[in-house]
Image 1 (spheres, rainbow, N blue to C red):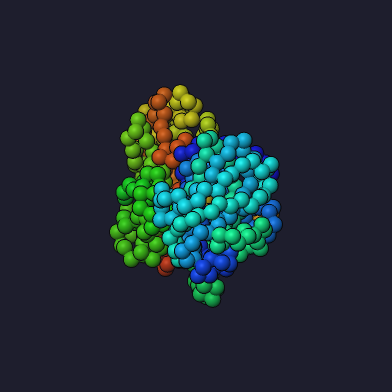
Image 2 (cartoon, rainbow, N blue to C red; image 1 turned 90 degrees about the vertical axis):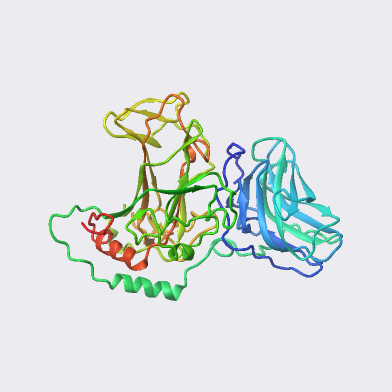
Length: 466
């Protein structure tokens, strides 16, 4: 979209990262044929967001790139020894120039080439610019594109980059060489045959008979306490220990940068009740005067906000998602955080962003995830686009995301009351609160709770009983 970019702090944390290696097409041993990589097909990144592009070929581009941001691409074939030209399809409406630095090995590795960035006339006004690397490692390499500019704000959008032998013309508008939309890197899919069988088997389950005076709220929960703290994020920065801001982890005690849904299921220790929930949950650490404040507890609710929750089905094995926006750094005087308990809120911090609670009330936050799933993808490049809101008639079936899943929410209770000094999140301002979920429920335990509690609109406890 040809609109000014929103300002945001350089320290904004990364939100997204592909979970599989980038797909590269058109490679050759000598790079005589262009190797063209779509910008959104990164394996990991810091500081970027993906948006739709109006450039030729359509699809998506990577946006909101500022000084210090980087994109990582795996298995990019740089060919044999000899000079190569690295081209970039870019757009900028910034008044400050900059460069896209091409590196290998790490985001701080040796700069092979620097692609200049100047104003193109709009954030969707695209030009192709290039630079020559006279020396470079040969063959398949991990390539980093790092952003360098004298200003703190966003200064460039990137649609794709290419590698050719020096002297070969860099393409001006290649057809999209990797899948766009909802396929390709970052869009892992379910096995459709297995998923159809699992769905049929789930709805064939006979729900437990409803007896007594039940509360008609479609819900069950997991009660969790803090497990550990790490600067890891296995969804956004898989395999990159220490690459994230500080997170407070709940549930599975093995969670780290290398965790997968399968590794979680293979580790039986959890700080959540019931024990059958081996999932990983995490949030940015809360800081008071630089000291981490742990939640007294977090209740993870599995419910439904749909008019008819009876078609809700469990999260499939391997499912993961994120809610909230770690990059959102805006003043917040509203009730993102509030005071729960007698006396409630009695004031605001000096910056207006945090409530001050009565001594009988605690700082609280509720983070809510979407109700609906596309039924195909276990994840998406930004870890949000495979789930979404209800359709026009208030059901999942009438919209882009036709499958009803439990509406996940974290209710976080911090045993603090606040002061004029306020708090901070490891991700930045209060507005940057976010949460991550990797499903590792034992399938039968999750299915029984969804069928008995959510599908029948019965309020259940952690044990799945009403």
